[in-house]
Structure formats: C-alpha cells, structure tokens
Length: 315
Image (cartoon, rainbow, N blue to C red; front, side, top):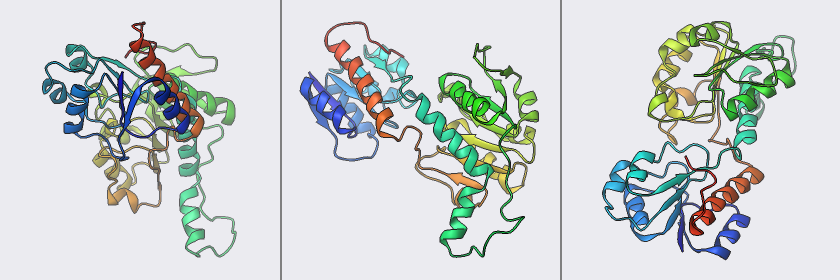
C-alpha cells in the first residue's frame, strides 16, 4: 500500500511506517499546497497529513475517483481537512486524540506563567545587558497561585489545563462549554460573560473550525478584567487577532500568551513589539514522546484501514 507522509516524523515512527508500507515522505517542512493535495488523493492509498495541509473541498472536487481511502491526520485538530467533503468522496478521516493532551496543557501553563510573571520581558532585559540588579518593584507581575482561571472549551485539553491550575496552583476554575463536564476537582460552568468577569486568566482550549471561527473577539476582551491575561493554545483563527491587538494596545487586558496565530506562521509586528505578549512558535506538542505517540496512533489507524478493520480514531 502506498503511503504519503506529508512531513518527516520522529525516526521511530518513520521506521515503523517503512516496515509496513511503501512510504513517500515530502522533503519540505512546509504544509502541502492545493496541488500537492490533489496529487496525493490521486496517487496514494493513504495519506498522513500534518498541520495546515490544505485538504479543502476544492481538492476533493478535483479528484472525482480518488485512489486514496484514508487521511490519517497527525494531531487532534483537523480543521485543515474538510471532513464532509472527504466522506462524500469515500475517504475516511482519523486523528490522534489523547496523545496531544498533556503536552499541550503543559504549554498552556508555560504561557500562563511566562505572561503573568513577565518572564519573556525579563529574559530580553538580561540578554540585552540592561539588567542593573534586583530591586523591590522591578517587573512586578500577576501572582498566579489562588487566582481564577477561565477555560473556554472543557474537552480533554481544557480539563488537563484546569487540573494543573487547580492542583498545582490552587486556582479556582470556571469554564465555558456547551455541556457540563464531570471532573475530579472543583469547576464551575458559567456563561461566557459571567466567567470572563471573574477570571484573572482566560485560556482558549476549544477545537478550531467553522463553528468557533472568531469565537473570541472584541466582546470577549471588553468583558475581561483589565488586569487579566489571555492565553491561546488551540487554533489561531478562533481569535480575532485584530481585536486582540486593539485590546492590548488600549490596555483593556494586561497581556497575552500565544502559541497559535490567525494567519500562522505570520505574526503581526504589532504583537511582536509588545513587551506584555509572550509568543511561541506553535510548540503545543513539541516534545519527542508525544510526537512519537501521535505518529504511532496515526499508523494504528492506517494499519487498521489496510487490514479492513474498524478505524480506532475516526473523526
């Protein structure tokens, strides 16, 4: 069976894939273009896409009789794949839920702490040779322990972030979600406006896609407390980036920590020049163990497809 892997994965995953399939791996680290997606649907039995590969409706429409029968996405988020169009073409789509949870939650805590405690600003000060020594009021930040954290999207990742905040820092957890979640720690479901009004930290952890596009806009930032910080580890286009920039420039919120961007990898200069903004290059799952877990989960889906078995992780 011919398998296309869109970008090189950890070596253990590549070796396992090569032992089982006729593997082609693109040489670039950039996402697949529309033309590449069209060719992949026509030429391969299965494709292992990665973040940003452009499997849109137009790609499926361009291949009326695709050879490809499975898109085994590497990652939990799959908003770069038009799942309905894939299914209409007879192509199944899978993802890798669970494997990404802990690592992504850890990055959320990294951004919370870096932004609240002005760690990026402090490191830049030291690297620039501008630090003249300790004094009592230097770089005073937000003390995270005991504060109220609002989680927007209480799925696996949202719950993992909330659990770390509660058990690690004694935070009060409030959340915004379509349904009540049963968790093993205190957490209060609230309407968006009520949750924002009490939160010191707001974290976006909801899935991307058409339903959540610009879910967070000017109204959300206006409802936050002026001392509160905003963190996004989900998908960039959940947030109206222009509204976020305006809120930061006007001092309506105290700061932001971002691992994802609306037009990624483009990061607006307005964000890059702000000292109260922490910017990471989409590091959410960027650790060897979770990336290996994601790769093995994607391969499990492909192997099941090749053997005609039920897919472990259909979306």
